[in-house]
Structures are given as C-alpha cells and as structure tokens.
Length: 297
Image (cartoon, rainbow, N blue to C red; front, side, top):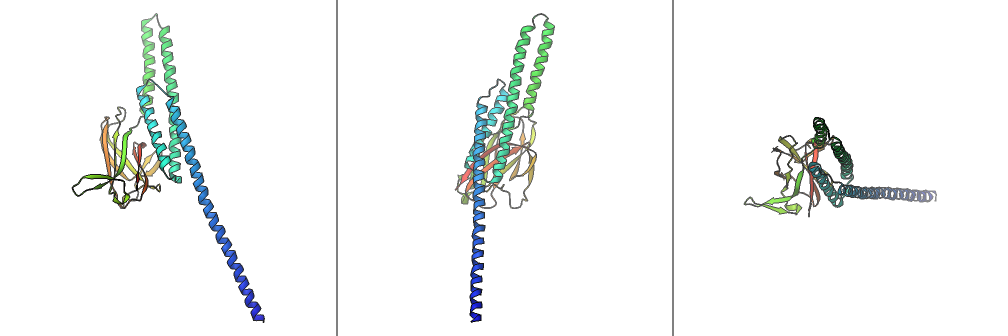
C-alpha cells in the first residue's frame, strides 16, 4: 500500500513539473512573438515619420527660388535625392539598419536645406544692399567704382562658398540585372534565378568646380535583407563616406574631366540572388551621388 501511494505521488509531481515547464515554454514563446511584433510596429512608425519629414522637406524646397543658376541646379539635385529616398522607403521592407541610414540622410538633407535658406537670404540681402548703395553713389565716379568692386567681390566670395562644396551627381541613374546569351548579347531580366550580372548606368554631371582626373566610384548593391553584397573572395572592403566607413560591392575608376560623362558598371553575381527589392548606390568623393533600385521575382 505504501509503495502504491509513493508511486502516485511520483506521477503527480511529474505532472506538476510538466505543467510548469509547458507554461514556461508558452510564456517564453509569447514574449519572443510580442518582441518581434513590437519591433515591426516601431520600424513601421519610423518609416511613416521619415515619409512625413521627407515630404515636408520636399514641400519646402518647392517654395525656394533663386536667380543663382548654380544654386538652383544644386537644389534641384537635392529634390531628386528626396524623390529617390521616398521610393526606397516605400518599397523597402524596412529593416532597422536601413531605417537608421535613411534617417541620417534625412537629417543631412534638412541641414543642407537650412543652409540654402541662409544662402538665399544672404544673396537677397546683398542684392538689396547693392541696389541701395548704387542709388546713393552719384557724385564721385572713382568712389562709386571702388564700392561697386567691393560689392562684386562680396558676391563672388559668396558664390565661391556655394560652389566649393558642390559634388558630382549621378543623373538619370538606372539599374537592373542581365543575363548573357551565347552570342555575347545582353538581355535584361527580372528573374533572380536567371540574373548573371548587375548593371547600372548613369551620367556623371558636369561640374567646373570639381577637381578633374581619376575618380573612384564606389558601387553598392544592397540586398532585400539590408546587407551589402560582395564577391566571394572579398572580405568586405570599406571606404569612407559622411564620416563613417561602409562596405562596398565594387570600385570603378573613371577619368573625369569636368564634363558630363556616361558611365555603366557591371558586377558579376557570385551567388544566386534572392527575389525582392534591391538598392543600388554610387558614392564619390566621400558622399552619396546617386541611388536607384530594382525588384527581382
């Protein structure tokens, strides 16, 4: 009888232990699931905030205008960047790393726009001063010419400040994947399983201020998971941009002579690509000069 009671107690204790373990497992699974949900919600909120901020910056750019042609061209280039970022945010799955990069670029775009506001205000103020002082200068022709030269120097110095930081732009940028036929012809494809090369073509903008000569163009292919693709034999080479180091897919050297220049970059795909949304970025002189994207089925 004693042995039977002892056996029953063992069964009860075993059931209690099993129930405790089952409850603990269910609680653990619930915690992990809730954590994933919270992260997705947080990323979704951040994406919506970025879209709102970029649309606001774009609207503010629409209100800016200046007679300074070079400055106007620069501002239009910034608007193209914003358009590209809006497309990237809407299409991308929204991993945390990409969201952080886009957030940093959004803050940079806002800072650049504030700089344009100050510059345009300075130019407008300078123009008003020029008009006022020209009206006041009537008697002494020598003094008038001297003041005019001083004002022209101020205007030239201001224009030099504007153009000093001007960077190259990758205009009309396109990217996609191709496969090669036996006769050597290229055929575009949007099938991940058939893609053999990533191809990107664009036009380097004309820029009289940028130093001519050899330029390193850093080409980055970013997968749907947010990682930069590299060759199998590469350990992930890095380059400097915006004060940080980043991995690049490949590097292309060009001889830039301050004129508009058409460039195409081809990257041999070492491993089969997965379907999804891909970002393509081009960097030069430590800054992003172009971005586009494509989808693979």
